Length: 467
Image (cartoon, rainbow, N blue to C red):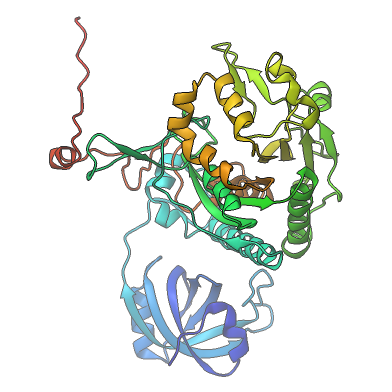
């Protein structure tokens, strides 16, 4: 007999079905035993009576979270026992056979509640148990539906999904790289990508024209409560476009997604377009929360922020740095400021914001290698250094490069907002703590001396100071 998922049992009224899953709760009412059986699709109520001696004997042994397999007849629940909160609330399964597949120790915490009250360290140490709770399961299913919608929408728009390398070159892109030592080339390193930025621009040179990827971005950043060392973004790049083309594409994608997957959310279409300086003056930030009622969890206020400055001064060092990144095309009328007054330059950057969060930054890219070299020099690189780090990109631009631009919405943060969660860890299957540790896998961790020797690496130990 083939297995039936709990959510489908209503289709088998009067028939025998085979179910498998976890015993979430076990209750006795007189001599009758009730088991709430959980699988990925939801819950089913199992009824075990003494008339089925073998099944009853097995049911008496079962404890919470044991994994079981059973066969039984799907019946209508008696009037007064219907549970309208459950998809299967009108039926129950009268067990005839029960097999215990796996026993379970007592869980370190309850999984029947939301779990917000449990400490992060414990939840992440036992994340495989934490994920059994219904709230997190719903979050992961919702996330899958969102990414599936994104894929389908972009494919219909003529985009090609392409994977880019995870082992790449260390280049200055605004954050620290995670470095990967090369065994075959001692002393040399790969870097994990902070984003697929350079690869997607090279795909435009390659004539792909419309690229997307559900991409992993890895950045060795300082610890912060709502930041992850790795995150997921919808990476998009388009050729022969201007700023409004990219903005319209994303706005259409998200608006259609909201209609289909989140019809109960209140949104405004078209999204307001706010000038950067106006946003700073009115809201004191470039990621404003423009909701009319900030206490309404179903109000989603998307907006665009445009006309960003190209460069700003680092508050600590006083050095000039890009507001977005060093590949952003300045607006045509402000290119002349580059040589003498770069802080007056206005870029083609456009940010997508929502409810006080930045969800994406995008821009039209520099395609003139002479202009790109000027930007590199402005940021402190001489020509030799720039060619050493970005020679592949500069050379590619000499072989016919189309005008292009893109955007990369953060999927983790978007899902956090859509699912009304307090932080992104609630919508990621296996997140790390705020200080970038994984208590479950105990990472980062030490490696053996043999591994280090094979990679030609020595760990220098800090000298203890004199007392």
